[in-house]
Length: 122
Image 1 (tube, one colour):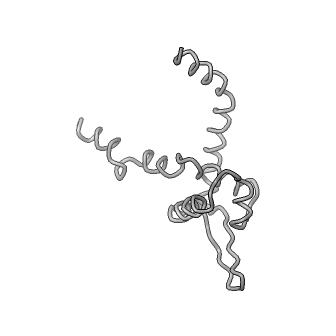
Image 2: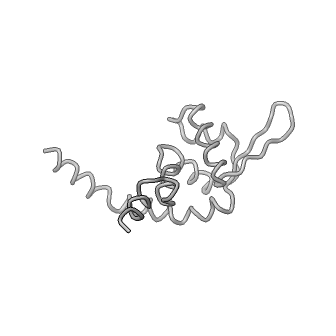
Image 3: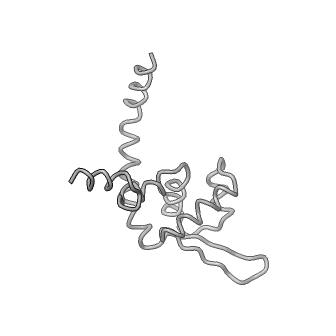
């Protein structure tokens, strides 16, 4: 029984929460998902302009990961120059209410967390 509990949380393949958080808990994925939810269909450069501090390489890596997980859909139009657009999938849209809950919790508790950090450091 104890071994089952350990495996549930230590092995990413056996822990859905850890597996999902590995993706959306990185520095950029949640921002990209929330931006696509707010703005809808966006081109790569539009996302890049909205999240100024992300490098193009990191944005590309983030979008590919979100696409691989089925959270974002990438559409390529065969034209010159190529046109590529990104949007949330149905699965990605189903995640948004949960992310919004986390955003609200963070807003409501950030001052308390900052105070706690300051007390801990002193």
